[in-house]
Amino acid sequence: MGRLADRHRDLAGWLVTPLFTLVAAPVLACFVGVLGSLGDHNGPPALCKEDMAENMCEETSLGVVGVHVVISGAMWLLLWAIPWWRGLRTVRVLLAVAATVVLVLLPVRMFNWFSHT
Image (cartoon, rainbow, N blue to C red):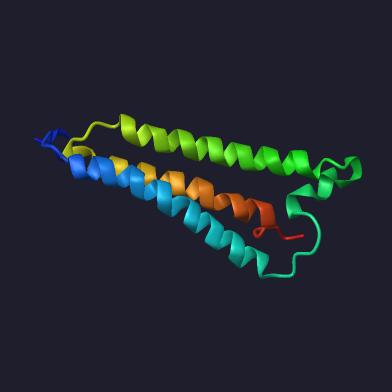
């Protein structure tokens, strides 16, 4: 049968993947944020440019932070829902990487690195 049908126990991988993600994802996001803050960024985050006239930068920033944290947290919780079968190890790792990417994209959006303006 295929790799997904491998139902041998992978209890260590089932425990280590979410716990490693819980530690590594915020550390990577903070590291990216620190790298982003090393540039010339005086004033509010780049995503607040449109909301500055109404003085809504705090609400906009907290909304973006909330969306990224909730999505990444939901993906992290899904890691615990995936059975501990060895055949699902790749699925677990890909979901952990996706949760990390969602969290790391938060400082990228805050600094608006991919904007051409």
